[in-house]
Image 1 (cartoon, one colour):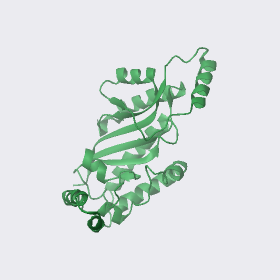
Image 2 (cartoon, rainbow, N blue to C red):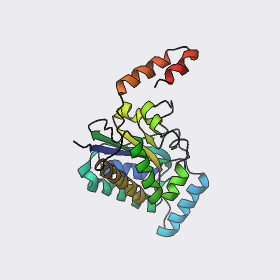
Image 3 (cartoon, rainbow, N blue to C red):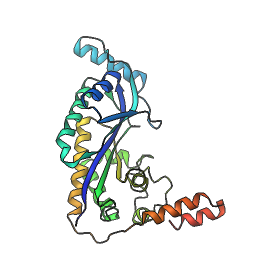
Length: 254
């Protein structure tokens, strides 16, 4: 039986006005939560002033939406069949973006989590899939790829057959595709390569990610990398208790 998508969710880092946060929580109860994130930086005071001036000139009144706070909006998990409903939330965010109630900058990311039946499909834990997904990104989003693939928080370096199989990078979370730490925490694969962008663009990236997964699992691949997660976790936890002179040797086993 071929793998299939079970659920998906997403995280959008950005600056949200107080009014927008309230509207999202009221319009979509239990869909989203907001939290602070120390890895993102707020837009400059100058950018905020310019946004307020532009809004005032366009609608003839001052911006009364309150402060804009850098936060991460975290969605609940959605079934694959809920894509049409999810689109409505992105359109709400798009309207807020056009009213300058939602800002983003290059320190902010758009992260997509996907879970599967079975939980850990070997077809997707493979360099074949990583290369296939990379090629799709380069073709459809060349500008985004150029900016994000070297970013510390979503770099593509290390996504190799050895890297996926051994997971020897202690900062493996900060990769364009996050395998190990996302699976350990959420039983998902996390796609971190995308930056925060105009909401209609992020919705397109979400659709393209899910579509790329579904196309890939329908085609034959040359190799399947079975990864014993429990065994890897045992080695990782043991490494933390070792003396420094032997830790490196154990890490090389992972």
